[in-house]
Amino acid sequence: MEKVILLVDVQNIYYTTQHIHHCNFDYNEFWSQATANRNVVKAFAYAIDRGDEKQRQFQNILKAIGFEVKLKPFIQRADGSAKGDWDVGITIDAMEYAKQADVVVLASGDGDFDLLVKKIRSDHGASVEVYGVQQLTAASLVEAASKYIPIESKLLLKQSR
Image (cartoon, rainbow, N blue to C red):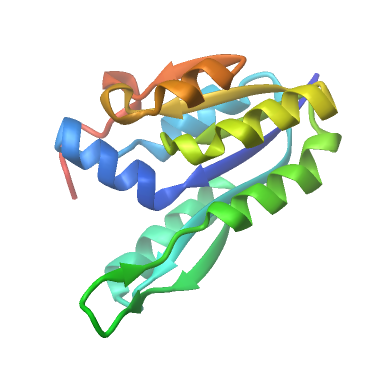
């Protein structure tokens, strides 16, 4: 059985899915597809903690599915802009755990990950499957992936919560 690692950029998936499909990503269906006939080595969901109850409920759902949820505080800058991304954390975990996996599944459309995907494929020989919203996934990331899976109807909840 193939060994798999799941890495989910929660903010990227949330905003791209909302923007294009106007609904939420189905994490249960994603888990089912990404882990079918595979042994899960690690599964991380990277999110921003704004400290609200609805978000805590969502994080508990992710944990119940099987994800380890990693949180960073939401930072509001004095100029009104916000900071809160997990690119470096995702990269570190991917490099650490890729050597234990046959397949790395990355849910993100962020083109910054194209170099990471190439490195995992060349250095660890693992295949990398990328899930992302097609219209908002960087072409460089799609090209770097072993397999690209667009987030479409089957991976969407029918209505926003």
